[in-house]
Image (tube, rainbow over all chains, first blue to last red; front, top):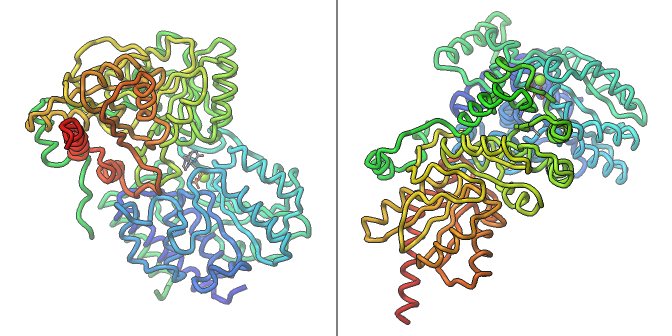
Length: 280
Length: 341
Ligand SMILES: Cc1ncc(C[n+]2csc(CCOP(=O)(O)OP(=O)(O)O)c2C)c(N)n1
Ligand SMILES: [Mg+2]
């Protein structure tokens, strides 16, 4: 595990949120709610768990992170910029003509492992990488991030079955369980509960955490896996987390803040930073 | 901060649109949603099937007015098409509505087997088709749908150009018992000149007469062909514009007539130039042994340039300027070769 204090993670989490909003506002498009719900997970992954860095990105023994819920690309780009994969100012070209920064992850962007954006693709790819790791007796770990709505795609369950069958204890799937998708509550659109029991029945180790708690995420992601079993971390999150009027409100799935809303969101973030005595 | 992105039409094109007094309508997608709602009010067997796609499909009003006639399957496009096939086989009239990119890629086997092969009359509705989702990237583009569906037996493939064609296509889809795919974009469309009120699947609409060059275009590209034709007029070129809303079955008669009447054909589509409308026209012309200048405009087989739908259109010459340039080139080459120079 990489040494970084919880205070530092907290400070980063507010900076990340601020940047997510900044670049969505600048692009005039983006997936706001889901980026804010998963950014604490990415924060812990990139700052504490993954052994990836710009210098080691071509190392075959690096850990892999594939963002299956590709639409939350702004969170990924902001975190990759902070990790030094590219200069943050490049995000000003997000969604512009001839920019490599499109509205979903692509490998033209340094630090991105796989092109995603169509839901239900990350887990099967990760199963393949994890099997290759086993074949090569390599000790890298493979992580993917899925949305709760995304779990309706059958490909996830094909991969889930396959991962357990192949004993992929080097594989961890994280579910950004914010309970919302585009149309509304996931339970009203196509109920997938009880998700923990489903994964357990498929042969996975299930860990449930508060997806905004750095400590709980750290423990769940760094504890050694049960031998021979893949792990799923069900991260209970709040869509739009960190901006009061976006929290748990379905329209912020791909809502872009107006000027006034943007100003208010930044003000809120700043007041959190002050109240928590965070040094940026 | 960079400058605001240029829109779909150049200043010259906007001026020409003004001059032509074309009315700016709504998105074809909205015309679709209103039509399917009004049809469903009259016929309770009409159902829409969605995969977390009712918002993108403008079907929220449908869901609130006719909640008994909407089936939601969650983010599961393969299931969407399979369920629609089952509904059709049990006497319902299902419209399976999802972004064209997912519907015609992920659910292709369901379309091929459960809809086409088993002959279940599902109306497969691909929304935000082509590069409507522009900057969301290639995962969200459908530049393959016409090609793959052309290669499957027992399905019609329709790409409406304006609101009129959209309404008509949906009415035709509801009425016909053969599987059909209709794809829509999400930009507001200009109403094209109405040379005839007839709309028949498989019959093209000639929306402008001309004798030197014919643009055979489909969907959201037709307006650009029309503008190009108007621009060419000032150079003394007479250009025909055909809205080939039915890519399959293709209106071979109109294609061949255009190839015989004109010296050159330019096909235009929001699709890869491989396997779509252009290829369909080319094979019809070649098989009939007609000699004509020919150019296919569309998205080439390369990593698609990034940007909005307007950026992508402009980049690949799907614009008034790009199309009149192509037509001019073809005619110039043709005249050179005819005079033996
Ligand atoms: C195959 C596929 N179908 C549909 C979509 C469109 N889409 C993008 S995000 C989304 C909702 C995702 O909900 P969820 O997985 O819960 O993600 P989150 O709430 O974290 O944003 C949908 C339907 C897609 N990107 N890919
Ligand atoms: Mg969700």
